[in-house]
Image 1 (tube, rainbow, N blue to C red):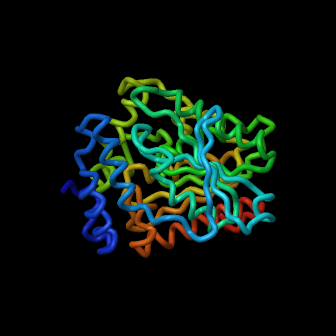
Image 2: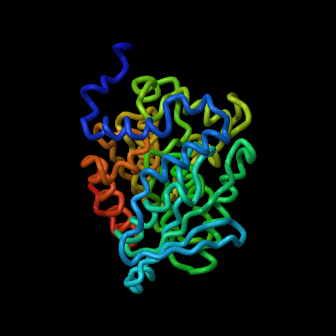
Length: 318
């Protein structure tokens, strides 16, 4: 092992190691060497294996108008849903995933917060390269706003965290009211020549080489010019962004993207906080029922969503 790289035998606990092995038994570490069709097939099977079902009181309905979406509602939360709506963007490197892959995650967020959740089924690569996913994410937020006229919290994991941030950058001068953004191990277009991209280059669940693969397939070229719609960290203006809570996994090449994004927002006078979840790995949302660290992080995520929806900022400077 390179002396500059992390020692995962020390960082990652037994529960998380078991989660990694379980995941890789369905979606192996070399999955990006497979065809896109095969990647999607085994990813969907893996997500079905981890699907935890819906909590009591949660119902969902699909809408194919404009941008396909799934709407989640808790039957007993009439007063809560008047405070805020959540728009959720799933992860999957812009290549895999959809309404089914994060179905139970969205249902549990709805249950934990009482806010309605709308998951957006954006177009995937390579059939639809950038900016297709961004355009669908933007259209999805506008669709929810037009339907409800209630403050929106944009939320997403991995590629979905990228889309949530990109939408926030585009809409800050718009009439749509964004109550906040919650970004879960997001890839925000940071410098892949230093920091966590090197320290965690060989991390389990996501490597730096895989980050590069997904970026290249999204843009159709490994050397594409990126802007804020695809890489929010490449923006030149971080002012007037909504209150932001970022959750990174410590054992993830993308970890520093969250830290750097927090720093940019704070320097621009925005409210932002970053949690680097100790010993966790990319994709840990699926471990929330089997790994205590992931369960605790999921509670912090839903607490953050609750606070933003209630227009509270309970975090001290970090």
